[in-house]
Image (tube, rainbow, N blue to C red; front, top):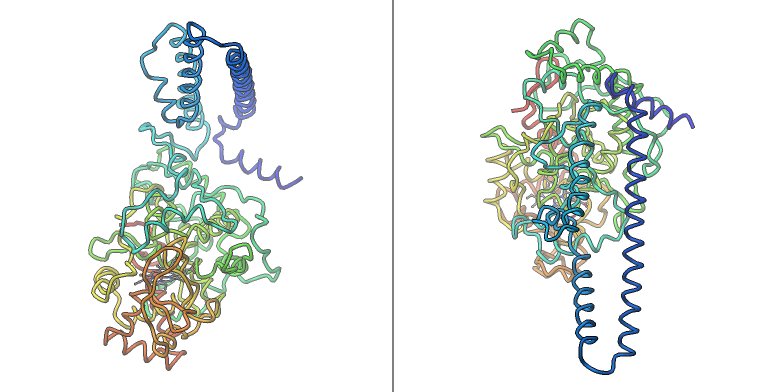
Length: 565
Ligand code: HEM
């Protein structure tokens, strides 16, 4: 009983003082209003059904008594036509119905009906949203009328053809053939963005995220081990990262109040109401009992990797590793756009990229974890996801440090279509990995081999199907071994019709880009090295994956990123 009360009290704290006073009467008003509408809807539906029943009976009676042509038959035809037209109207989409409300009324009755329904439409559109704007600090009404929830309805709109080598048929069927219990991808109000001026992002992000009150633990996730884990573990552990580490990384909770104030005053417009709201949220985040305990979050992620309901895999680790890689893979070093900073993957514009199909599993688990640890930025969480999963599947410890910040809206979402295409060759791989991400051949081979030693392809997502190694949930150098030792020939995936490479007994598969790891002489050199020396491969993979996580992350001396380019 305490949990809902705490959640409710937490919710009240997110409201402005005025909002708190007005909340109860408003809530009552809204509930009664919704009940009224529901009752009206039920009555109308009942009347409609009654009328159509009478209508049907009238038709039957008419059919049985009608023997000759004439007025009766004409009348009957009219009735049938009216019924068909009514039925076809009933199957119209909601958008068409709304559109129809604004057509010129054809009769006085039509006029009255349209005015009645239009009032309801405007009521929903403006009054409810206006109340949300006034009384809830975390919501901004978008006057363009682009309600974000509408985007959510179809998180995977029909993608453009041929951009990631995904088969069209597979694309069309991928959602209807899901055979496991996927959490729906839901954008929260926070994800939707606040349309704030960029200069105000700074004061918010220096401390981490706008937070929601912590919510009860979701039963879908495996329970955390009760072993207490030290806060300092991550921060103090020697980082094997080849990247220059900042002089001293201070977590927000380690800053003195003076430092906090100084950071808060970064905003030139600090009297702005949004600024005040952000500071209030910041304070609340800091009060969270787990604040700054990144090791706990890492452990939480590791503990949720085994998910028997995620079939056929039963383990979401590979999905998580791919999700993190895709968060970073949009980076373009020339323009400085993309990359994991900003947590832009939480916006539909980026997440709906064709190449991200199937990644809603990892995202929805990470989003649930964010509800438990609302103080962590999405950018940090989404990168930590892959890192924890690699460790959880027996891989190396990838250097990771916190401090990434989130964009408040989707303005910084990079142009899409930058993810690698599985059917292309080494030129394309170098275009993506070397030219855009700034990685060398050795890092490319380590990354692709490390990623694809785990998990597999799913016909319902990409059109490709199968696993790369015999042990897809164990991080090792098997990818390089099988690539070099097995004989590969091209074949067709029965479910989707796309071409991929199979080994002799068709138990394993390779993408065209994977085959480039032995076709291209420079890539092959590293494939052979990594096949022989697993320890070296682990080191190179950890370093290269760690590098991905820092692309586009510009940190200050204290390790905290303040701006996103
Ligand atoms: C040329 C570059 C790459 C291409 C074309 C590529 C393409 C793909 C494709 C088509 C899938 C199958 C998705 C599905 O059907 O579920 C996949 C899966 C995967 N990729 Fe890559 N990938 C590339 C590089 C990488 C890198 C660098 C990593 C990470 C370091 C990675 C990690 C993964 C993982 C772990 C999976 C398995 C996902 C799962 O089992 O759910 N990939 N990749």
